[in-house]
Length: 479
Image (cartoon, rainbow, N blue to C red; front, side, top):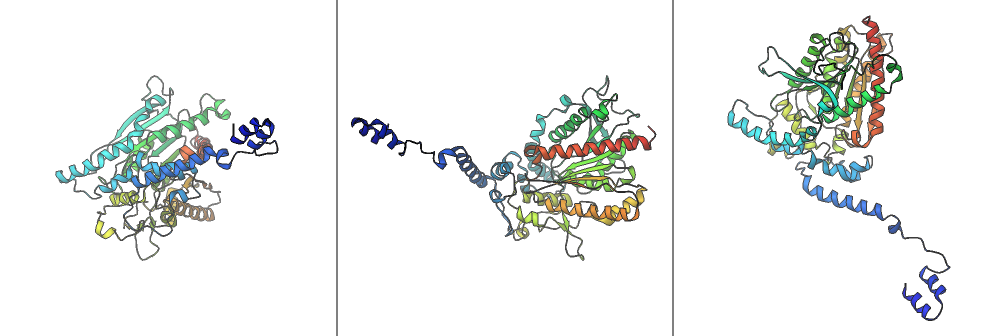
């Protein structure tokens, strides 16, 4: 009871007192803005508090940052969850940025130096990859692990490949996937991780391959037959060699060796060959597809590739991450720009020199090694296509993201492949498959969590392309 009501009641005028408490006129006054939006206000204040706390814990850019750089919370094109929360917390849960304190060039023959490097790199890799350990692929799929021997290589360790099929489709022996009569697609998958860690190898495999199988189960056209073509599809994960232990092109060589073995020795992929990669794996998917056109690649799925761009000076054969997106998103932690450059140095054998680099803006460190293997050069694609005797280019599925420093690298590749399509169509009467391009708004690879509609739309279109390629391959092979 308010004071005015109490006084009025003492004077015998309780109704007037009630009106006085309600602001007069006998009507209730509407709640204030803060009362009506209390939850939203609390969320925003909490987000700002978390952002400030996490900034002090994780933000450690010690080199010049471009004037165009925008703080994460001011990046209006970002999904709100990334803008206010995940964008700051990522560095804590996925601490790839800690690798920047490790050496990029190591004399692995020197036991003391090698041990010191391993003691720095190995624990961080373990922290980054621990999320993958929560996923048991054996619970979700039929699994077969194979080791492919290298020949004529100083490194005699085998290439480890994990093969997956739909649960319960491999007969009495779920590890037997070497069926030479398989008419199903082969999907070769390269994980991300900047060429230096294994990022999302199991978690994203479970999400992507699992969803493709769900689409197959709902596909009435194929379910009228005995089996969906996706039931027998083989998903192959390549554990390619990592930097700085192995420089470019070690990772590419491993993926090419794996594809060649699976197709030519195991006779997989008669129902279509599809290449897929995320982040650094997307870059590998570009190069592997370029160099395997003669095998009849049907499609390749390139998700937010890690693409250093060529120097604008045509006289220089150098590459760097410098771009509008790298400058604008320099404050992002998904992924950290200092780690991206550390990975590029580790991949191409550039030793870190803090004294020299302290004055170099982020994105401006250059390398004379093209880690895309020529896949951002339209002339290389045209040459490979002409030598393959193919009539159709593989269809490209490309994803880039707002908030991602690597976005412009992906767009550069899109323009490259559009040029290739135009050149091929000018000489070949067959209509070439057009690019399926998707732009997300949740930063690097975060659409798998925050933008399910984008993920599902992309998978449905990719499935439709696999289905079309499957029917075409069966017809071509008389199966």
